[in-house]
Amino acid sequence: MLIGLGENPGMVMARHWYSSSPVVDGHPLLDEPGFWPAYLADLADGFAPEAFGSDAGDADAMLDTLHDPSAWPVFTVPLAGGFAIVVHFDSGEEFTTRDYFLTHPDWSQDLVLASDDQDRIGPGLCWPELAALLEAPPGAAGVMDSHTRLLLLLPVLGDTAVPEEAVTAVVEALAAQGAPEASEALARHLLQGHPMWGVEDWWFDDDEQSWLCEGDHSPRKTPLGDHLPPQQRAALEACLTPR
Image 1 (cartoon, rainbow, N blue to C red):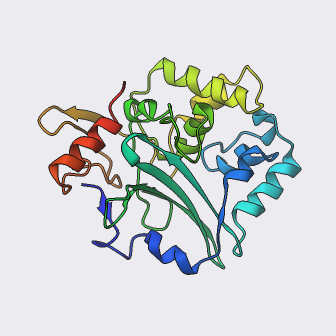
Image 2 (cartoon, helix red, strand yellow):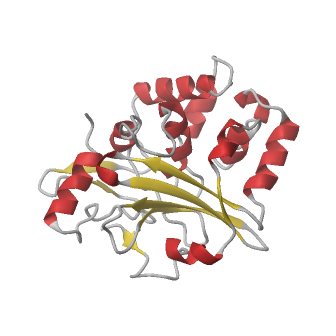
Image 3 (cartoon, one colour):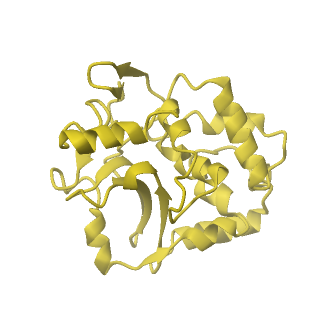
């Protein structure tokens, strides 16, 4: 099962603790100059902001915004069945971390897909799962555009077996956000995984109906949501199943 905050509160800040923190809506930042090279800076080491079609000054200013201790951006990627992946920035006095929570209104606690805090949790998704999440459910609120969803969730991905279609999808997403059309080198680099956990081997367990991961830091070593009631577990499996 994924890591529940109630089981190990020292690993990452539980979302309900954010109620007393300076959380702000991050969605307006998605359209601001320099957002993507700043947001994907950890994955794009060695690539200048110009590779994203951005100005270096805009990227630096956005990095300051994302790491502002007085305003912690949050983004919501709505999924089918009422699920969502919530991206939280957590900026203390010394450093900024980023947490990716899998949420549902019926759950008493959220699950952590990935976190780049000192305990490093990830990867949290394989490519077949991420590909299944690109289409937003009708009528939902949050990040709806498929290209934006892909780039926003890329840091959670870490899969040794990404197909060529993944490279094509990332190139198209980058181009849709203003990057040059010839962005294959950048796309391949971004698909090499977050530097804190890289890429790992995944396999699908037919008995558990869940993808599993070999990674030492991955929360996916055991079946996704195996602690949930059967009905909720089935809904979660359906949410992450390619359509």
